[in-house]
Length: 266
Length: 270
Image (cartoon, rainbow over all chains, first blue to last red; front, side):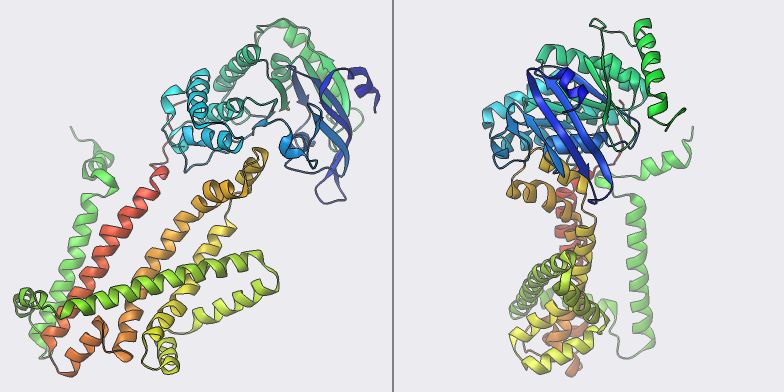
């Protein structure tokens, strides 16, 4: 285990140990990565574009298998033989990944059915989470009729309605305009405070990570490794224009300048 | 006062996406055909007049003996098309999987696409003699390569990102097939069905002309042999009405209903 992982060891709900991933078996996308996330914690994973952040989430969700290392969520090994018994995971992708041929309500219902939720409970949860995401009038709407922001809200509602142990979010607001993205970040922070989900949020935006997260895992330029872990000692609710947030942003920029290959050593 | 071309287009647009312009163009197309028929009847001795044919139509339609032949043709078209759709899907799936069998089926489909329908029909009818099986075989074998190619495009255009989503949410195989894979293929299935529907009608009638004693093609041939040109025209009208009627009153509305999720594609405000 690396020094970073040792520092953060404790009651880790998500434990990532020595993770190495490669798409072609030769070129590594993630290498010897360690990480721990406490239950109910909001952790951001920060790294430059193309560094392997999304790959990390793919492996954490069980969609991809690593070449080496292991991931445990709530004591269950991800991708192991007992994967079906492991706690459900909500996944919000960079693009909404809704089924165009199913209504908003049906898109949510499908994942709940797969998780074995009863029909009555599905119905109730759809209403509750659509209302929570401020899209309660769109239950019977086709995704193509929605705006980009509304589709991403549905995607978040789908992930949360599963009442998952962990929510993985892969730059979910990066394709939205800045005003919508800010509103969504604000609402996500509020939702997290109400629900207490464990969230792993991947982003390349330092300010977004600082605004949302308790801790930030800063990755190297690809292949992804943990370069540093930053605590975010700003009280909630946070403001996007908070001067303290700007100050921390400057500190992180200084730290990553050389490592991300923007200046100094590559 | 005026809203310009956009306003005009909006005013012309009718419920369900069709427009007055479509109707006008459709009527113009039909009108030109009638005009050609009229010119043909006036300048030749073998094309019967429009009035002569339409005055014979009510009596023709009340003849009980024509309907078994109409039903026989309809049954052959739908039966053979169903076989072609299943065979086309299986061929597309094997081609999509690749490997040796994928290559074999791909070559076979390419060869079948290159053989003219008439030649294939005649060859198959020689093999199967004058049997009902021969008609089904001919129509299926001629139309399935087109179905296979269209469905192959669909399989190749499958969205891997949705497969990842399904895997992340642990959708079982059946749920994946029902909610992700099959709906993605539906637009391609309809495209194949609508294209090959008209093709199947033409091939069935062609096969009936040569091979069997029942069906609209056989009746058309009989009328032609006896130089009953009014009857031949009446059979042609019945053929076109059934073909276009089922296309526009059955297939097109069904396609619109199943693919209603496509909507206008216009985004709502954020």
